[in-house]
Amino acid sequence: MRLAELSERSGVAAATIKYYLREGLLAPGRQINATTAEYDEDHLRRLRLVRSLIQVGRLPVATVREVLGHIDDDSLGRTIRMGAALWALPQVPEPDEDDEFVRTARQEVDQLLHTLGWSNAQALVTISPSYRSLVVALAAFRRLGHDWGAERMAPYARLMHEAAVLDLDFVDTRPSEAERAETAVLGAVLAEPMLLALRRLAQEEESARRYGFE
Amino acid sequence: MRLAELSERSGVAAATIKYYLREGLLAPGRQINATTAEYDEDHLRRLRLVRSLIQVGRLPVATVREVLGHIDDDSLGRTIRMGAALWALPQVPEPDEDDEFVRTARQEVDQLLHTLGWSNAQALVTISPSYRSLVVALAAFRRLGHDWGAERMAPYARLMHEAAVLDLDFVDTRPSEAERAETAVLGAVLAEPMLLALRRLAQEEESARRYGFE
Image (cartoon, rainbow over the protein chains, first blue to last red):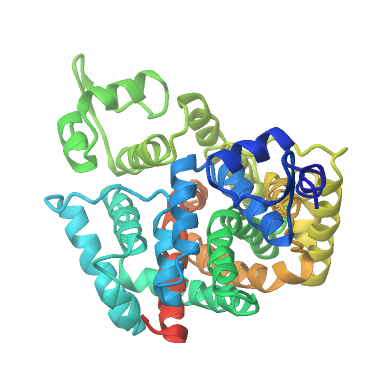
């Protein structure tokens, strides 16, 4: 397809597509003559991903470039390839280890991983920003006087593991390694607002079931 | 307790507590003499809530005042009291009904509520910003070329309902209506980053289980 069709099918303005091409976020089309290039379904899919990351995920161009670099890195195994793409997304800063709440939160998170038997997550502790995000979130909770710990988190973690099984079942249907990594990134960036909205709706449903509308 | 102890136990600076008192976010203490007031456990709890909403939830003071107004409104039934407090939190803007993606997303969300038998959530559709948030999130997804609909969302919605049961089981342990509404608001504002971190950790665990670390 030509640029005009790529623009129409993606809903992305032609000028924006040209900008992505210049920035190297989209591979060049197949040049047909001096002024015309031809694009295919891979371009369309990648364009939608870039659009998602910039428009919905609000990622800066440099970060998008880094995420795409990991997605396209055939030298990486699947877990690390998906992980690297996800870990290139903006993350919370390193927690302050001198802070007593951070230290306690870390102990509780370690206890949680032990309780759940998440040995793989344990092996990734030193490199995974997800672990760090959980420590930071729990420390904030505890600093505000809420005594959440491993025991309170465990049932939620089990539900999130069931969600992760659904996520990866879908990732596994994708036909190539690059598409699998793309799907994982999209799930992280785009599915989160949906999941939080579902949670609030579910709370309202459950609240009305228990207490009615009075 | 005196202001100094309230400050120490909450970790909130005395000057900040005075600011909250002036802004009406915290009820005045019991005046002992011209310069000294006495505070109790209710003050400490409320102070922690205000701190959470401002510091972690990044809510403006006017919004915090509105949320507290609903929490303290004894004329409201439990569902509406919690709902009103939650709905006063910042929400997504009204979706554009002329947009075809919004219209399709709304149909899919309506289908989802029907499939799940969430009749209470259906009854709240016209007033609940959670419903609107879900429509907006799904429309963004679909605009980017992902054909998510009621069927793809349903298993996630069921998991979120299990999480909501856990949430409300905890809310129900609180001794007063005001505390129950407070707990619901804290769960919305503070638990979300924790839940998302748990989801990412669970994805890493599951990914490594399926594909190893190669």
